[in-house]
Length: 212
Length: 212
DNA sequence: TAGATTGTTAATCGATTAACAATC
DNA sequence: TAGATTGTTAATCGATTAACAATC
View 1 (cartoon, rainbow over the protein chains, first blue to last red):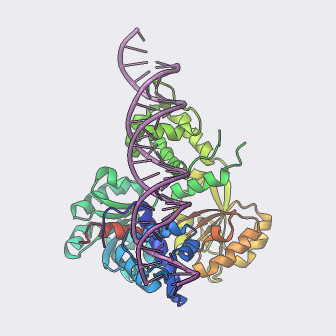
View 2: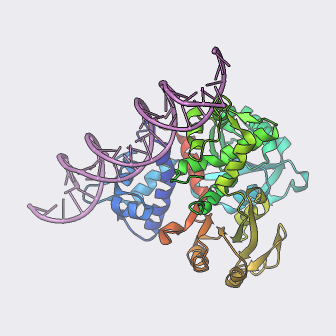
View 3: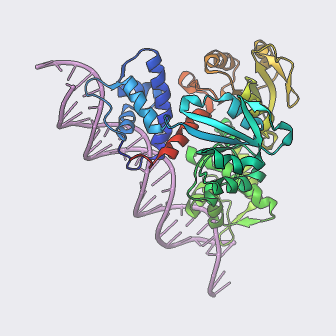
């Protein structure tokens, strides 16, 4: 797995390759050409070959790519076999949706703790995971290995919470707030999901061309 | 508002400009230079000026950009003043989180209907909006103008639902499913949110560099 | 073998950054 | 006026696409 700086554009496409390869596998397709994969992905055969070649020669000339092998390689490349432990902070609407609605086991990720500041919901469970007092965060993390934190809290609470997490050695974040984690902690690894930004982009696109 | 094809990269940054300009306005800052804005946005002054100039000369040499004016221009550019009417399909975890947790009025968007196929929740409300039987979709849309649909349903239901919506003349989608709307309807305007893809990208980044 | 299809290099395209004259 | 800062053009950088020799 030669890892000489893969661009973010390539990485962002990997989950899509993974999804489509899973579908092909389910349909008992055992090989696929870059052309066919490109068609499914709505891109070019060139891009498919360039992308996959970042990680090694998984294809065979005249044959294409073996579906299952390639799928398994992408699992390893993405690290879906790593069994990451996650904690979720903020059991509000979005936090609950994430914890209850997503299939993390498919990605080798496990939510091991859920925290909130609202004492009315302490002890409630989401998917059999108890909601704990955010004040017990430090003691929990000292006893339970944690790889990544999902931030589903109001923006006002974010700076303080991230500081506490960072001080506990947690540097990986899935951030649903508008707090700029990387601005404050340049070595943090962050994926931001700014739903309202995406909604506004959609507003633009709906509006586009309709201006005179 | 000269609209000769603005690139998607620029559009995706507009909501961030908007957010930071709102913050500046709240702090009673009345002007800002491209350099200062770049610092806040963690980009370059060059990019800020290039971006803003796509839409016209909002700045003044030697002075910078007037915060409130610029903010209001971006509202118009994004179309946050259009009062779009949305319907939400699927009142499960993510649908509920979207309907209950987001501040759409800030973006000039209003959810006017929520639909689901589960008769156990018909009549329940989210933010005072009643959950209706998906079978009443057609009659509802014929009586109520609808600009955009939020798709928060399982993938299996997506193809059929999108077909019904498309046939009702709805071509704008906020898509939380993995169904490929544009593949099927090339003239549809779609923003996809693939949360599991983002999570996998984060897995990669957490994994990165840790491979020998 | 002939046909298919890869891996990889070269060409193109687009986005970002730098530079600087214009001007408030 | 001098200093600041824009608007805009040119240079650079990166990502995508095209082309083709290698080879299964």
